[in-house]
Structures are given as C-alpha cells and as structure tokens.
Length: 269
Length: 298
Ligand SMILES: Nc1ncnc2c1ncn2[C@@H]1O[C@H](COP(=O)(O)OP(=O)(O)OP(=O)(O)O)[C@@H](O)[C@H]1O
Ligand SMILES: [Mg+2]
Image (cartoon, rainbow over all chains, first blue to last red):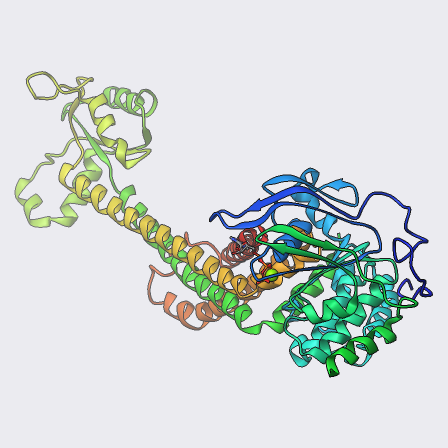
C-alpha cells in the first residue's frame, strides 16, 4: 500500500527527494487563456509549473478562475490559447475518445462530493476501479485498504445520503485516490464543511501527498492555507498574481498527526 | 465484454429507481396493448376491403350468334394476349339464363326465349387496372363511341358505377387505416422515448460523475441499454399476456357468432407477439442508448 507515510525529512527542494529528479513537471501552463462563450474570462495568460510531489494551494476571490483551472486540467473544457501539459503530455493532443483514459491518471475531489447516489460507500470507491477494467480481486484488495486509510471502515454499506458531509468527502477522496493517480486535484474540498471536519480532510490530503502524489487544492480558506505553509498560487481575474513557495516549518516536516495539531491549534486561537 | 457487470449495473439501477423504470415499462406496455389490438383490426379491415375489391370484374358479352370457335378465340385473346388479366370465367348463355330466371322468375316467364349472350367474366390482376383492360378490348374511337377488337365481341362492360364506388370506398378505408396506423406508431415512439428521456434526465448527474471518474461512453451506455432491453421485454411480455387473455376470453367466443372477427387473414397471435416483442425491445434499447448521447457530452 503506497499510502504509508515516508519518514519526514527536513528542507531541500522537493518534499520527497527520493522522487525529485524524475521527469517533466506534473503540471505546466504556458500563457494559457480560457475565455468562455459569453466573454467571461476564466484564465488570462496564466503560466505556472507544478513539480512532482508538490502540495499546492490555488487561492483567489470568487470568479478568479480556480475552478476553471481544475476543469481545464481534467479536460472538461479546452483552453483558448497557450499550451498546457500534464506529465509532459500536451492536452491539445488528447482526442475526445482518449479523455476517459487520461482522466484515470487524475484523482478529482469536488466541493459537492459528486458521489453516485445509488451506490454504497464501498461501491462508489469500487466504481473507480471498475471503470479501468479492474477485476473483483483487484477491488477486494484495494477498496478496504483505502477505506481504512480514510477512516470509513464502519460505513462500507451506507449510501451517500446516510453520511455526514465530512464522511461523504472522505468517500470522494478515497475514490479519487484508489487508483493511486500521480496527480490529485481538489476544488474547494472543504467548502461545504465545518472547520473541524475540514482539518480532517486536509490531513487526509496531506497524508496522500506524503505518499508521493502531487496534490493541487483550490480553496477560499485563507487561514488554513497559512497554517499549512505550502506553496500558494493566487489568481485574480484569471491571472497569476502571486506564486509563493511554501514557508518551511521550524524543524522537521510535520507528520499527519502533527499537522492536525498545528491546524487545530490555530482553530482554537 | 463484461456482460455480468453491466447486467448487475442495470438491475441495480432498476432496483434503486423503481418509479422511472416502472414508468418506462408501463409506457411500453400501453403502447403495445394499443398496437396489439389495432394491428389485427387494420388487417381485418383491409382484408374486408380487399374482398370487396376482388368482386370488381369486367363483363365481355359476345354477339348472340357467336359460334363456339369464335368463343374459344375470344377466350384465348382474353387469357393470353391481354395485359393485367388475372382470370377468365366463361358463363354460357344457358347458365346465365338459369341464374337470372331464378333471381327474377316473373320477368323471364314473360320473355319466353333466352335473350342473354355468352359472357366472359374477366377478373383483373389489380382492380385499378380494370380501365386498361377495357381500353385494350374496346378502344375508344374519336367520335366517342367504342369499337371492339374482335367481331365476335358485342360489348365490354365494367359496371361503371359499382366499380367506381367500390374502388373509392375501399381506398378511403385503406388510406384511413394507414394514416391511423402511422399516427399510432409515431405516438408510441414519442411516448416511449419521452419516458426514457425523462428517466435518464433524472440521472444525468450520475452520468456526469461517471465521466469525471474516467468511464468511457460505452461503459456508461451498456447498463442503460441493457436496462432498456429488460424493461422493454418485461413490458412486451405483459402486453402479450394481456392480449392473449383478452383474445381467449372475449374474441374467441364472439368469433363463433361473427364471421368478420374470424376473418382468415389476421396474423396468428404468435407472430404478432414476436413482432411486438421485437419492437418493444428495439425501441427501448435504442431509445435509452440514443437519449443518453446528449448527457454523454460532458
Ligand atoms: N461554464 C461557464 N460558462 C461561462 N462562464 C463561466 C463558466 N464557468 C465559469 N465561468 C466564468 O469564468 C470565471 C471564472 O470562474 P471560476 O468558476 O473559474 O471561478 P472560481 O475561482 O472557481 O470561483 P469560486 O471561488 O466562486 O468557485 C467567472 O467569471 C465565471 O463567471
Ligand atoms: Mg470554483
């Protein structure tokens, strides 16, 4: 299981030096613009690079283009100008029929969870494997594991409408991660959750990031962003107006529990 | 292909969305019931209309002094050298006299001798061709009268008034039936496809989510198509059962009394059932498969 934590390591470039030198950036935007039909600007001449293993926050006011960036990354819509690469692959080269296969390399978490209402927790997560042609054995192996990781072992047979918002979002994260995609995107994953629950979700994303998965989170939650001390990219009317490398914690990188404590501390002050 | 998985998905969705599934099945059922009643009715009516049309004949009267050789020559002319002739019956003057006297004894008592000529009764291959045969045997002259092509022929008559009436009446009946049939099929198709579209519409969010986790179009589509097949088959089966019960309980007892209902050329129930079943399955499978296309464009 890849979700076991790497020993924390201080300093030095990427958070996970073991994987650092490999290959092209996971996400690369060069002068990307996206204009919607009505003339609304989604992105405007945006350039940014996310390397393997990074944990990046995308922040900005409402309408600044955060969701647009996410939608472009899963190729739900296409860019108007510029070039966009994911893991070295130009998204313009991916035809309509190839999109489903491309998406299997990206885990996606949404503000409104987007679970399948007619499936239990277990089946929702299993669906992500079935889509890729995963067999019954594959499912029996991976799904219980990932549900344990996300703390849902007791809710396997509940339907989404029998879960709290936080639990539903955990299911969504489990589904996004069950294939162990190299890139995980989350668009305001805590937007509908209370602060306590949000911390749990952030811890989960952090834990996933520490397995080597690149994580990009769009959020409004400035306080949380500050406490996490990760890289922050700020958008304003579709432009990148700030790209700030993560401030380091004093001492070692915290493990998940320590991070939880840090976030909790902040919550209480 | 993983039929097992897709089948399970289809069953799951029916179990979890019983109301739209029931609506789709009910609309198939109602449509088939109406069709199942209507198709035999159409067949009977057109059958009856065709029977009437078959009565359209052309009478070729020979001259009163025609010899047997001349009669044989005319028969040959009619049977072998005239287009659109289906069959030729010879009615000798004796036979005609006998029949007419039975029908109208007093008048023929007065007449004493037999005024009737030998006659050929010509049945056209299609009632609409009767005019063509007549023109071939007795072409119109510029003066408006008709000549005959053989001196032994006295007159060619097609009982104009009767024929015209029969031809218009039966074609109106046939046209009306065809129109009704077309409308009914259209209405059925609309009803079924609308019901399916509605039930899919309530699930478009689900389809959207499936696409976002990387499902291919066919991976999403197969369960829907299978669901359509199952619901269509269920609706079809139920409709056929009801039709069979209706036939045995109501039509068969009546058929003993009314010749029309047992008219020989309605298709047997088994063929009708097979046809309805095929239609139900095809329409609902295609309906769900095609309606889905719109939602797949995410
Ligand atoms: N499908 C669409 N069609 C037309 N315009 C759109 C569409 N989606 C987004 N926009 C416009 O693009 C701009 C950026 O929207 P986007 O959803 O990316 O913002 P956001 O940063 O995610 O905002 P929020 O924080 O409220 O979620 C807005 O002006 C919005 O109106
Ligand atoms: Mg948004």
